[in-house]
Image (cartoon, rainbow, N blue to C red; front, side, top):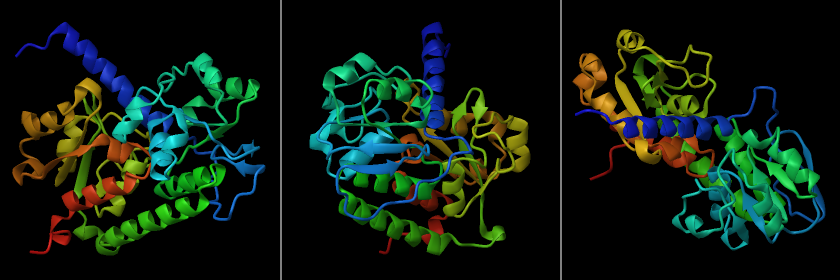
Length: 322
């Protein structure tokens, strides 16, 4: 079937969106992780955010704006949905978030809309540090940057929001529940290298892109008991040749889906690309699809992503009891 010009344009847009989702959630290596705060907050208070900035929160925030889907998911998970007064165009989980007023996209924040709402607290991402955050702070708005690089820092980000919004106890309960689920997986997947399958994670198909060692998805693969075939690549989201994939001979292929109009294109590539027909993953029918939002968004559902990956990589360890 011929691919129309319009479809090629749409797929190009999807690729840009995927990279935006990933890059905006990954801080530079020089940023320090934020220590979680588990005490009761008394306002006014000062918090060090995940960009290393000291942020003053003068009062309990009643109007909160989120500039990233992961931030929105944290707010809802902490029971703060009634205080959310603005989200991005990409904030689609939970479903109710779609009904909130929209203030633009990731890199297209409509500052005038934000100012019109007059929020007490704005949750930004790493992408916004250079331009958006200074502009908002110049308008006397309170901005907290969440930029978790690791799974542990995702837990820290949840604690940070809990502290800033007066939900420290709820944040402690949520992170404890997440830690318990993580441990339930890693207790089973703490295996020697010879028992860890080689894994290819397909981020995009044209060009073929995967995940390097400096990403949360790489960490998820390792915690799920696999070996990322691109672990030696230093670039976070590198292009990889089919020849390199064939030589690595992955035993498991996991492809992300759900990004805009791209939907399951990476999955269909992994299933149908004729040059991959001889790798073990294809020969043994071990090509799996995962909702990209479970692995790329640094929010509470990151544990769902870990559990899914572990089931794909080690189905023998996670069989449901009869």
